[in-house]
Image 1 (cartoon, chains in turn red, blue):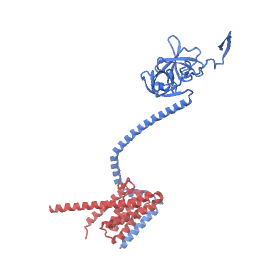
Image 2 (cartoon, rainbow over the protein chains, first blue to last red; image 1 turned 135 degrees about the vertical axis):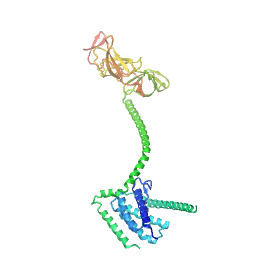
Image 3 (cartoon, helix red, strand yellow; image 1 turned 90 degrees about the vertical axis):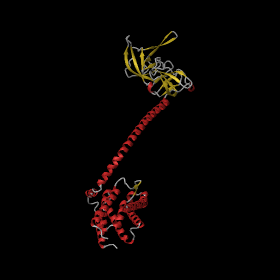
Image 4 (tube, one colour; image 1 turned 180 degrees about the horizontal axis):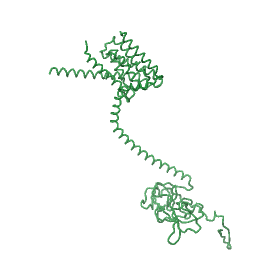
Length: 176
Length: 281
């Protein structure tokens, strides 16, 4: 199916806005999407997974390279650290996406879980010497991935419900 | 399968990221970081503004409440500190005093002229009429009426109050009377008495009501009366209106001071069998 160039442009603007929103939500303090301020929901990783699954790598890889730099500039982590992590995750998803049914909810969940786990494991391994807290490991490796997956499930269900409502409304309008 | 161009792009970006990462310690990225933050900063500022506007009212209420609670707590703590200091002083005074002291609480009185106070000790606590009432700074008065559970104390602001006083060195002995509320008068001053304003006067012990060496007050001023006589006005040491507790000194025959015992400047004489002591000038 050949897409209209204007439509494609609009689509990328839409995704761009989503990534800006995801960065904003991730860097703001106190975090908007978190449980008790400790268990953070990685919306940026969810966005990264979905971008990598559905969009072209020529768009996704540069976007996440810059996203990583922006996140580093806010978190005051070494510049380039998040870029590397995001690029790695994105590349792994590009490899596996040919072998899965990306439209299936279960596979989406699997991909997101994998991405969050990779991100959190790297984060825990690198920052554990500074933090040295078992609860930090627990939050990072268990609670945060679980919360992120549950959050994505909730968004998925909401989008489905909204989509079906809109389609029903459209059909009714057509019959009238 | 991954396209070769994608792999090349990935490798290029990873290389760039690694390069940036490696030079983190060597190159100052502050300007670069600020530039990177630029697209997100407006969102963060607007969010901060919204949070501030919503939170301001709440925080003002909370702060006002917190402030009033803190003030209340501070006042309470001040009160407790004062009470603690008072009780400590009372304990110290009682343990260091040579008299047997019974503590009592002031439960009533005559607030207008402070001539009498009522204390919560009575006959059942072995109190009797005529007992001396004192507190940390000095004399308060004496018990004039004793019921089973309470007693009435005649204070130094009572017009019937009278006490024998002397100076610190026990050179001069005088009598202090009620003058007006919060003031005592010392009359009949001998010509050789040299006392200045601010000097303290103590109970002499004469009369067997007030034990000796308890502060009565300090000389406020010397006044010349209409008949040409001088008298001292004494400001009593204890303020009756501020009293919460008092001590009642146990009734005992205090060893009366002798005006001769400590005076070495005397000579003995005799008229027949009768010995007399003569003061030397």
